[in-house]
Each structure stands twice: as structure tokens, then as C-alpha cells.
Length: 223
View 1 (tube, helix red, strand yellow):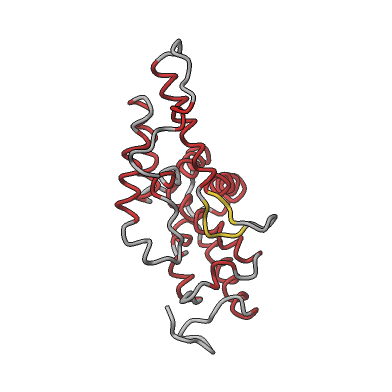
View 2: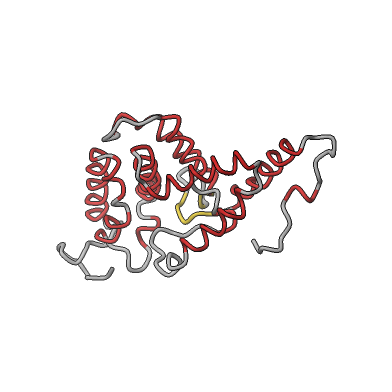
């Protein structure tokens, strides 16, 4: 989306009788409908297509609810759900950056910071500050909730790739070593889930869905 492109609500402006605050809130809610169109690299299990960011965020919220028992630190489940619900909103303007696309990651932070500045200021000032603080918290990973939220963000594509018997694991240059490095934030939120991911990666190598690392039998040294 270009910086000159109007907001979605401009296609059919809201009634003038609405308060300024409600107009800003509803306009933001209309704008974030764009999240449903941002495609990720991960394949769906139930359909022959890639997931979108809105589906990803919903899945993470459910994962937080069901897997919170595995968090290494005590977490506020509601707060963690808020973090995963808003964490990818900036991709409405910044686009998705695939986990194994190192070229796209070069300017990721710059793109996403600019997108956050643009998107969250559509809200009333108090809510803009609140939502931006949640996004910043997720990015910084300094709280138990943010660390567990990030762990869920890395675990979900692991599960989808497992069910696809490869998925993005089969991209050029991706090896078991690369996968472990990219999903390592999982261990900051849950050692038990990190152990589970290690088992899935090891079994993926044995099944031929993942290229082994350079230090493993048959490793090609590609990273």
C-alpha cells in the first residue's frame, strides 16, 4: 500500500452525526480489515493456500489460551492475547517478512516502525498510545507476556510446516540449523515447547522434509 492511498473508510464515509472519537475508532477498525489480505508464507493445513495475517493472529490467540501452562514464567493470559492480536497489524502497510527471507529482513524494522507510526495514530490519542505500547512491548520482548507471545509466533508456523511435510522449510538455503536459529525465541518463553520443536525438527530431518545442518550426517553446509 502506498502512502498516498486513502483509508478504506473513505470509500463510504461514516455518518457525520457520529462523535469524533467513535468515528476514529470505527475508521481504524475498517482500516485493519486489510490484515485479512496480507498473505504469509506458511501453508494452511485445511486448504490449499497460504494463511493470512488475520488467521495467524487468531491462531496465536487460541494458542496462548491453550498452551499457557507451558510458559516458563507466570503470565497474564489476557494481556498476552492482546499482544498477539495487535503484533502483526503493522504489516497492513509494511507487508509480511517471511521468516527465512534474509533479504526482506534487511529493512524490516524501518518499514514496520513507519507503519506503526502511520496506523496507530488513526485512533484517539489515548488508545493510539495504548496500542502502540502493546506493539512496542511485543517487539522488545522484555516482559514474560511478550516472550511467550513471541514463542507462539514462532511455534505456529512450525506446526503448519510439520503438517505440510515441509512447507517453507524446503526453501533454498534452509537447513535444520537455520530453522533452529530462526525459531530460537521459543526457548525464551517455554523450554518445554522448545524441546518439542527440537523433536519436530529432528523428525523432519529424518523424514526428508528438512535438509540437515552442516554438523549433521548428510549436511550440506548451506545456511
